[in-house]
Amino acid sequence: MRKLIRIVMFTISIAFATVSAQAGADRFTSISPEGASISGFVIDPAKPSTIYAGSTYAGVFKSLDGGESWMLVFDLETLRENRTTQRFIGKLAIDPIRSSTVYATIRTYLPNSNFIGEIVKTEDGGATWSVLPRWPGRDYVIDLVIDPSSPGTLYALDQTDLWQSTNGGLSWIPKSTGLQAVFAGEFRSVAIDPSLPSRLYVGSTRGLYVSNDRGGVWELLRAGADFHRIAVDPADSATLYAAQRDALISSRDSGKTWTMLPVSYVFQIVADRRSSAAYAVVSTVDHVIKILVSTDRGATWTPRPGEGDFPHYSRSTQVHPTCFTGPTGGSSSRPRTAAKTGVSSTAD
Image (tube, rainbow, N blue to C red; front, side):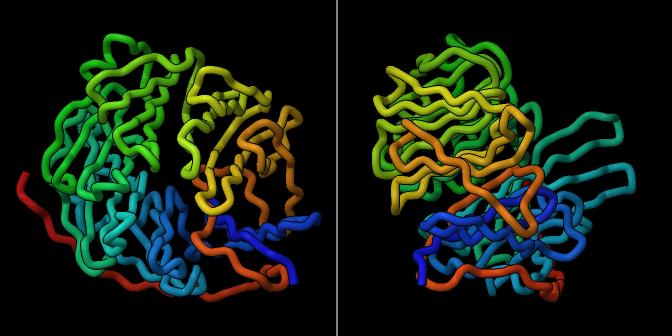
């Protein structure tokens, strides 16, 4: 028997990896809904066997058995006004306390070739959905995070602005006024310090920024190109991880000094709240996709071999909320099921 940690990631499908704490290859098994092109997913923190997966063109799928079977709980077709309006699912976010509440961002292309952002929400685990009042940003939402200390508080990022909602997405206020004074470029990612939720990080094409008062005042933490992923160690707020286009960087002193690991591209970074280990999905300098693991807060990174349905691209990666002891899992061919439910709309 070996101690195992489960990692889930998606490319255009979801891959489940059983990562052994001992040496050896990690086994990846596809668990995605059949025929679905996956754009994002979340795991229910209260019921880890429940997974929500956003399908770019279909909507939101839900699995109650860890990916053995799936049902379509939100159908994008219910929002289509005409054949020339196109919608695509983007980011998913799940309430860390009331896990029956899930948000999904939507990129909507209009007949005049413009695009807008929309957000839909369920408060009953996907049985019903509502379209939140019109997103006030100038373009679509590229990142969405929930304050773990106050789940009704959301932060949404588009390419030019950061927005805050304190009522579950019913209304939004801009939080990037102070950021504009030190900012240049386009926004890429937003992160909340889970130990100190008043501290926010925003990554852009020009640098990494921090606010210690929920977005009131901002300062440049590190200049550089394309900070498209940010992670904060849940057990140690001083430990930060960030992804640039060609480097994986980390800091153990709140950004005063940094360690850099050159790679070809960093897809994802996640920090495990139970073990303080960090995982990064990267394309190495020789263009091989690998999972790198750090157990010393980014001082060193160790590549792990993979077998099975190993992804060739990753847009989202999560460590499963539970660890377990058992034999290394293998791949299997499993059925996928689908059903549909409706959606309601709130007033703009």
